[in-house]
Length: 103
Image (tube, rainbow, N blue to C red):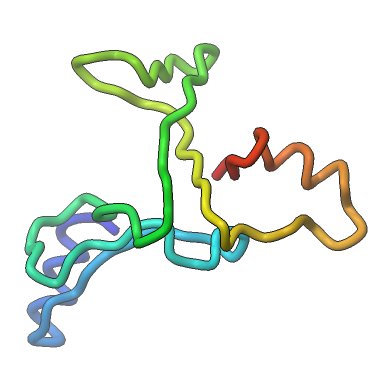
């Protein structure tokens, strides 16, 4: 969510609005802001039981090991990940890198 939209919802609803990130394959919540985090432009910390890492994508200029600005594809690992797409093992193989889910 863009910071101006985030702040608009906070003002309009007169409450703290938090952000997070997840998808169905990762049991919805990969990360979420804590309730006392009033910053904008971030998706918070990993949810309990979730491991997150960045995978470099050199062809896009994303280098996870860049000390100034690490960038990459977010990978999620958890015991609660999906077991695969129904009757689509090739799609499952595209999405998974070992035990890590490519987001």
